Image (cartoon, rainbow, N blue to C red; front, top):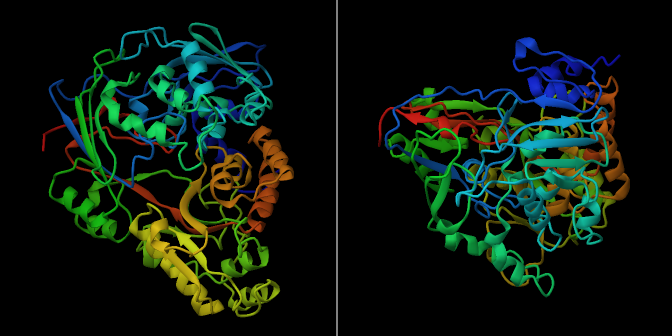
Length: 587
């Protein structure tokens, strides 16, 4: 019996009603309410009825209401499901099959429900026959299959691909260019999707409750197909055709209640949305959306305090502390199993040496980072582990890189660069589009390395152009990481699997044996008595690779004005109540 106090019971409770049924492992029928939940083995196929929507009809009068929003950072590649897309508004421009609330309960959206076979290796999803595109044409299963085969094509495949299709049969062969389509997903008819998996995965439907998994219309991207017709584009040009979408936002055929009118990326950063007249569900109360993206947190706070923004998604760090002192009721906590990080590129010297990487990790004063950079608005890293303390199976004894200058210096002496690192090439750290607290945390880490290891050649810049000619390659990148899904194994997949976003985009440290071990853990049912022990064993291997500086664990909150109602956000589905939000007054 597993003695970990955070294991089975607490884990199942954390996943919520629908997720419990998925985690149990039998093909069972999740109940419609939490009070009626049962686990009942039945022969396949078993129709899994997802819960009724959690929101109520009505609310504010259906007059004209505009939501004014401000988001931290950028909108990435805009609203293109399957790429690094915006999540909060985007999920209501292109709708996924399901939504997930903050408790991990599935809500039907484009799909009414699903069947699963007994060993959870085959799933059938049933689309809502009322669903239509903004041009009035029904949304069909062949539309979904065509989109996924297009957007996840290896020519331009981005990191969300594995989050959506990882266990689907044939996806790995498709990614490698060895197949013409993803073998394991097919349309049985116009409204029925079938997935065959390469491993058991009871929580598989959660993969289709994200903005990344929503289908779009392939014909909207004919210009991308034409640009790639003669083969893949150069690495620095392969995303250029997709960015043209910003210029023709109003022409896009969408599936959600909102359609974009204007998408002006940074530095203009202005976004407008209007109602989709063909939306096939209840008419939203908010009839227009207008917003911007900012990296200036002082400006974000000012807009909110002046009443010129209904919601901030989201303010952190010192400016959040100042706002919270004045308007504590505006803060609405979010459940986020994630961390702020600096990723080491293990293919770029000098970080290809593991002794140097371990020296750098042991030289960091972990407790300083959340207190000085976030002013207490984040949780201190557990000695550099990627595993947040509020996740199931957390082991407080696992502290891979406690602050220890002597040990750091000993590891540095074992590296090819000697005790003082005099022969070490310059280390370039790119903060990119990071917010002010992450930039400040990076500067604190830079100071730690200078003070405790004597390293002078560490350079922090916000853009690649700022390094100047001849500065050498970027060796570290500031980003975020974590578990997108409410399943612990996905945290390791993100960081150390060859298809995970962290390893694929930043560290380049994955290898075949690690892939196999992570996939074995993904196939385990989370209520297995050995699950936590196996996860902890593998976590020690992943942390032992020394690829990631976990600056702090995310402690997040939305900032809402008192006149804005029913705004709820989950880590998986973003602002999942947007069509049911309403305002008491305009601003």
